[in-house]
Amino acid sequence: MRYFIIGGGGQLGSKILNRALRGHEIFATYLTRKPTIEEDRAIKLDKTNEKAVNKIVKQLTPDVIIDTAALHSVDYCEANREEAKKVNVIGTKNIAEACKENGAKMVFISTDYVFDGEKGNYKEDDPPNPINYYGTSKQEAETIVKKVCEDHIIARPSVIYSWISSNQTQSSSGKPLNFAMWLSQKLERGEPVNIVSDQYSSPTLADNLADTLLTMCEKNITGLYHVAGGTRLNRYEFSVKIAEKMGYDQALINPIETSQLKQKARRPMDSSLRVEKIEKTLNIKLPTIEEALDIFCKQAKGETL
Image (cartoon, rainbow, N blue to C red; front, side, top):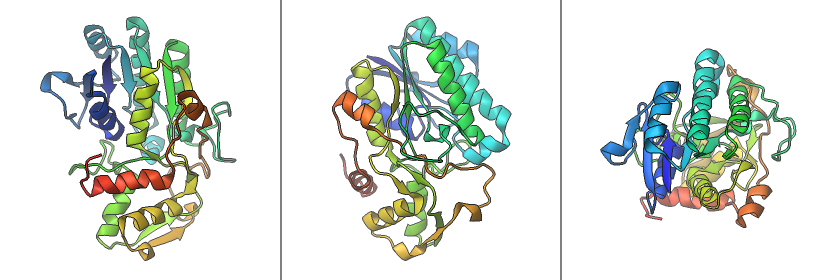
């Protein structure tokens, strides 16, 4: 199968790329972080450039396009709505239309932030109601993907994290690559951290997400799925588990409330996701937080999995 990964140098894109290299033909795009792939398969591409997207997709004729590229910083999107719409909505529309035109399956990575967080444990048929612009842009993109490209997968993860064996510690928008890496670096230096105890989610290990997405493609699954971790917990609980697994001082972690942060964008208080649909569809069990953090810790220690 020929895969074209949009954003192959990012956290999730690099995980998908490394796994898909086993037995598939891979091409990947980048803007700032070049993917670790052969020079002629790494393509600099801005997905907001409709003509460039159409040209390269027509040349490559991929079977599957996986769109991981987005502006992910919630506060940045809130303050820069025009740019966020251009990347997260218009850019996604360009990919979807290229997929339709060239007969490729589209895999779009959405977010738990399409929900308002009023109830938590959301299922796929719960109505979205985003309370910040990042979530709004992702919901708009979901609608476009459904309308434009019949052969699609929309995957909603929650708080994607992983161990990144790189000196790269920030995304292109200046956001830390992921919460678990940021926390580990802080605790390793003995620095105290304030972590909210009133925001719940379903932390999702990028490695497991990548594996699940590729399995969905290989089995030709279509539709909307929640593809997240198997445990609901708040950020403070998540942080304590990371510290426990990694052997850091848990006393460095101070629980606070979201209201103390004075963030630009509102956060859903409980955007946790139910994953029974994808587990039943693929006959799998998504990992608990303990199982996922075992993988995270082994990677941090340089163990090959």
